[in-house]
Length: 365
Image (cartoon, rainbow, N blue to C red; front, side):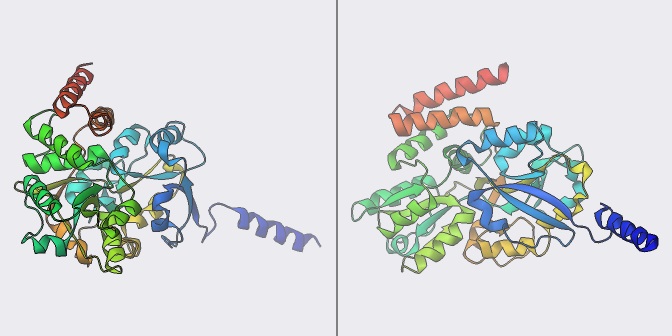
């Protein structure tokens, strides 16, 4: 009896051994619920199990993510975050090998390179674009608006005949800085100047407080809006949804004086404690089959390849993607200034002057 017992003991030891052949590495990844459908149920890698966990509460996502990373919470290994959040978490993140960036669009990759490695791994391509009623604009002899002044003129002209609003699903500061870059043909360096005051006046005239994508769809359906500023990832879904209701939308780059610029707002993967794991499996987020599968979920792959992305192609080809030009604390100041105008009716010039003063004080401290 001793020999069989000895063999059974050896078998049990092998079955519990971490290094046994074929064992999958396990990763717990926190994902905002609004993006869970993109990741859940995907066979990302034969070398790992990916346990996707909903991150809540979303309205305090930034605080939650900072808490998770700063305490190196054992509840997670990685978290999926929008690009503007990534720099906040950088100091706690474990880097990915720089070689993982091969094939990622260079203008995006460069935002996340520090000391020869990647502190965040970009996963999706996303940025602000404009959606507009192609049929309505064509009736007025207009295509995609050439600049913001032209867009304002078209909307005012249309409003004499019919409801002609424009709505937004974007965070105020992301849309504002993207449109400001389009107007100035460069990433903004300050909050207050001639262009920014005119832009904030545009925000006030058309009440560009952010709505959900569902609310934006309702505005189109009720024919109360003929255009919307949305995320690239929202555009494809809205185009398809509205087409089924005989409303034909077209996606284009943001109106610009010379060249369209937009703040990169795609999803990134970040992690900590990864030195204890075989993290090569995480590379599958920027590989096959996950990247091309993103197209079915309404997202655009971050890889610089000739993917067929249908109605989003023109907006992608015509837009230069740039990083957020200010840190998150400065952006909070800008957001407050925009909301003071939209919600409280304060003067655009006075609000931006105060915001610029606060920004300068923050930089000097």
